[in-house]
Image 1 (cartoon, rainbow, N blue to C red):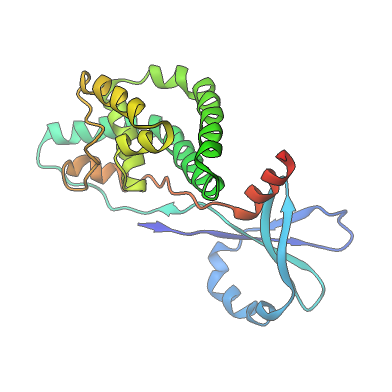
Image 2: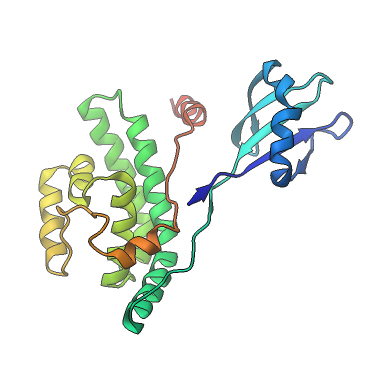
Length: 232
């Protein structure tokens, strides 16, 4: 189970624009009541350290910036029938921890690419994806080559579980059918079936591990639109 966390940043007069961070997680129920009158006050978005956050101005004229943090994972201890199952669980967790940063990046890049190219013509989308492919190869090719077969399996499971799309279809959408067939054939030599989507229930031990890793990503449309304008 994932529980969302929230922080409020309050800018005080006379602090030269610096924000004092107020960790208010334990006081969240009180905050919902205390800040209820503020909900009708002035609101908007402001940029802090290159990122955009929603803000509101209270009755005293102070600016309250609301930052949504990543979810907090809460799970009960797993129970296993055999020692082999427990060892498999431990291996999956280690592999998931190694694959997690790449899965997060992959989901973020996919969501942002999906948003940025939604109104592009086919030729424009192709040029955009080709440039993106070059950047991805420079950043990820070396570390991904060091992954074992099982680590690669866990990485693909993380991505497919979040997007609900087989890896084959992802490659086909970004690189075309010919490239997708090439990689499907190559992956088949190592036991990977790119056309077969990850399905919850096929591997309950892997399911239990992935339940604790949140790789979801929500596109920041304001920030992406601002970046796109600067590139023009």
